[in-house]
Image (cartoon, rainbow, N blue to C red; front, top):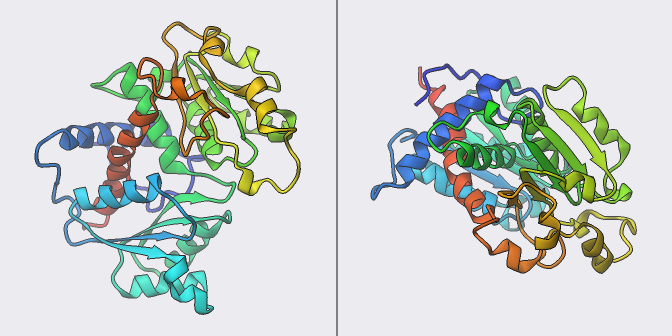
Length: 330
């Protein structure tokens, strides 16, 4: 495990992560990746601690990944689903959180459709002066820190399996293509990739990539570029991340049709010919096959890192839970 100290009580955003913090997470995740390759995949690092997964919106990958990560660390887990909770009877989100606090919860992993809910719960825990940490598992159109970190881990372990670190991305070109407007994943990845010194190119129709995203690149080590056509974003790219069209969040007619979107921005083999010869493709999932990415490309291990991202998620979330949880031991 890294010897550098970890002082972060909550993980709510990557906007203020330092290079040291990125590297602590990456190196800790690398240690847990080794643990997960063993026959016995469990360690007693958080034995006796209680981790509550409070998911106020549907999730497959993130929820299952956090639950498995907690169990691999020997923690006790509590799983919340809003559809079967007292919230259907009028209980507030903060009262729900306080109920789990009263059960002895040490870490709350929170996902919500509205931005700011994890921050509000973290502030309430701090106001109550209890040693409960909050980890943002995705909130509205704000951020998804653990996804940004697992994407970073996936890329940096490809570049150096034994010593993944932020600076490996310096000078690389990364393209993010798709529904950037509604994507909390994109926002977290913007912070992490621009922190590395890489070139980050965002590409989408103008309705899904407003000019305001240029502000994300100000005063960062890396450079940020916006494109409303795909070719310039893909030219000589080392990595391409494509994002799901979040139709459930679209309240206006932002696209002519899915067919037109795929024609202009869908990622396929022909388009990848513009990238570096060894380009790799990522997608945080779930995937609309044949819309954001061609089905054959998604399943091709020569190019696709999509399943690797899922595997990386367990190691990275173990790292986050471990770093937050072990800091409570005093």
